[in-house]
Amino acid sequence: MAADFTKGNSQVAAIVVAAGSGVRLRAGIPKALVRVGGKSLVLWAVQALAFGGVTEVVVVAPTGQLTDFEEALSFAPVPCLVVAGGATRGQSVANGLQALNASSTTADVVLVHDAARPLVPGEVVARVIAAVQDGATVVVPVVPISDTVRQLTTAGSAVIERSSLRAVQTPQGFRRDVLTQTYTQTDIAATDDATLAERLGHVVKLVEGSPSAMKVTNPHDLMMVSAMLEV
Ligand code: C5P
Image (cartoon, rainbow, N blue to C red; front, top):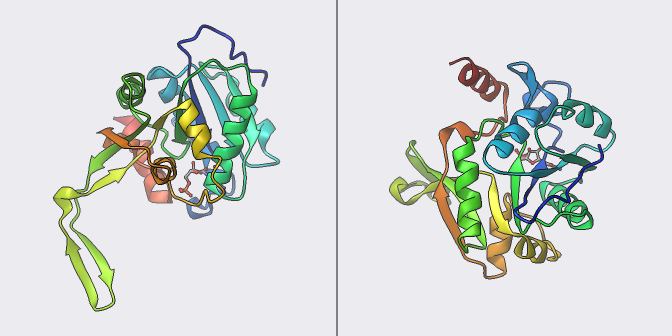
């Protein structure tokens, strides 16, 4: 889809990574194309970002399925550019960032979001954007952990004091130049983007996330998301 990223200079861009195979979901199609409540997960995710203030999106899709994603996003509320992903999440983010930087965008705030978190509330998205606009370079939404957590050790296992632990969600927010610098590193192996930025010395600011931003990984998670949409 042709994306027009030329409006104004209060633009906020997002990279939505959706190029995972989703084998653990056992749906037979890419996870982000699975439909709940009449819409694909990737459309729910883009709508949530737009609701929170994102004005343009690069969606990173599995190679060979770009047309299916363009169709799934044909009624998206903001311009979406669909590009091919890579073998790892980090490579997919790098591909999305390269496409964003090659576009006409004027955004200096960029969010990176998992399509697998379709129901992130707009208020969480807005909180992440506001924190970057207020001067933070790297922003991460987090939630407290309600389970007791044990770490496996050589001797067996040990409890970790959960009051000091937080689970990390997306969208993660970045000043665009910081995200670009982050992805110039040769080692981009990490489960999230803030960790990579932190390796370069950037301070990670935490903001409040939401249980609704849960990640869809297995069939049970999909049932949870369907149930949340019916309430
Ligand atoms: O595998 P995991 O649950 O960590 O994936 C998180 C997000 O990263 C998902 O939205 C998935 O589609 C995306 N991803 C990707 N490219 C990959 C692997 C995962 O865009 N090669």
